[in-house]
Image (cartoon, rainbow, N blue to C red; front, side, top):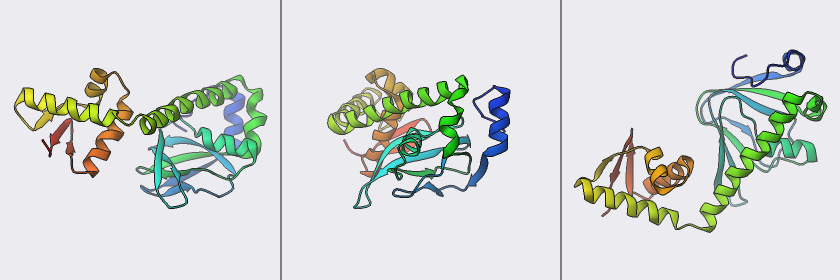
Length: 203
């Protein structure tokens, strides 16, 4: 199995013995809010989008899971015996390794697994703080729009040859945050996104 982030032979043997592999097509849902979680997913292939869904059906993006990564929210629900609070959707054709709930704590005897789980909590927590910041301090979208307008004015073109990473570097923020803002701006018909291009639709 590719993209398994472990090398301990004993741990790998247990994974091969007890874990199941599940294949998903783009837009398939792996985890639904309110359902009991019987496994912890580790992405082997593709990308999963994790969102928080409100009672009104509206969703807030939390983070993406890439190959080798797992979901901290799923781990937390497993350990606290709570129902899922998030929805996990395949962004594209994906493959996920399903680790049975009962083994999550048992495998803490393996240092590699313990480090993996702890680092997952750390990285996901940082991403959640970023989401909270974007919601609480929502002036970043104004900064991005001002930046794009200034660049457009300087280049005398409404089409900018620029990557999301370049914008993030110049605004001293994370690429993921810029990408989310740009997608929202595109939905509002403020910009049109292309491959390493951004077209301003509004002056």
